[in-house]
Length: 186
Image 1 (cartoon, one colour):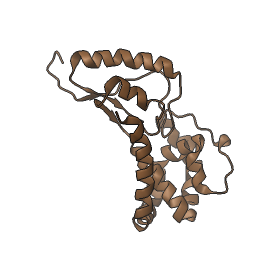
Image 2 (cartoon, rainbow, N blue to C red):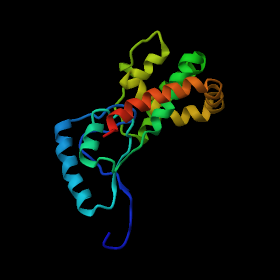
Image 3 (cartoon, helix red, strand yellow):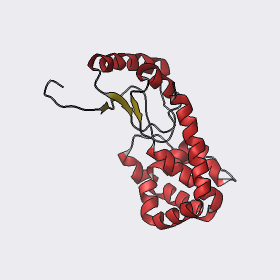
């Protein structure tokens, strides 16, 4: 700011782990103290909002964000849209979802290298209903970080399935975003 650079948001590195597609992992009270300190800096400069990257599913953190920043925040949840798209696919085109899941298992060890995640393939439960994988910590992270591989191999099929089942996809997104927004509302 001394150099005249204007910015509207800042995404600080915080304690704990903000992994992809799952809730915050760490001491929530310690995070609260850290966020209060950063909120004081934000209030002092009164020029930017806080940004929570990897914000999908950080349900335990959202009330703290509102507590310290009110409306001056940005939450990035792009992964939620993809995972809810996969939920739609699992319910309507289970064969395609099975192919995406198999590819995710195959690609996870390599695709995870560019992410900070802790999912373990060995800890994924055996499920009868494929969409239940999207409610499991390990499966969610595996599917989330292998999205690039899935899009490269099955992108057209994914797109066509979501277009064909747009109402279901919209319903899944609406339900999931309402869950996020209810915790972010003041």
